[in-house]
Length: 237
Image (cartoon, rainbow, N blue to C red; front, side, top):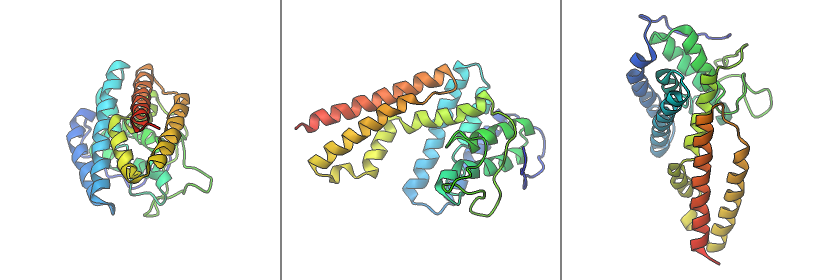
């Protein structure tokens, strides 16, 4: 890995389990200082906590290190408001997380493994995008991390856990609020539901890195589809 600049020398080598309490507070404080709405900051922090719980469950099911995956999932969106463009918030998060993890004493190999998983969790790409959608630097001008090795199963699982929560029932409530569903006309509601159901059905093509994550992913999709189909029925003709 290159460009791991700005990391502080750790006090001592510590385990992921030891760092988790500090990581929760770090994520909360880092997001609290962002220029975003109170709701946005709250949602992002609670999303990180939910993804962390999913990560622990999947790690146990797949015989991975549950503390390490929980830690990576907890930090996965810490850079949500640090990117120059939103699509790169994983890249920005990789920078923020790596600096924090090294300073807290996580072994460098593990810190870099988590940073890679965080960096790629939005698009699955090892390194920063080269097209017009992305940027090579964060909002502070720091160059994003680059990696020359294939991500581990644990690193790839961070994105899977994020996706499972993004299609949770909690997200249904947040989405309906975001699109102002109750302010739409009946016709507009029907059209929106139809389009969303088509989108949800298309997501079955996504393949998770583990069987446990795949099962959680497909169950999340099925629950959302069932909800929206029921909602469409209740709206009626």
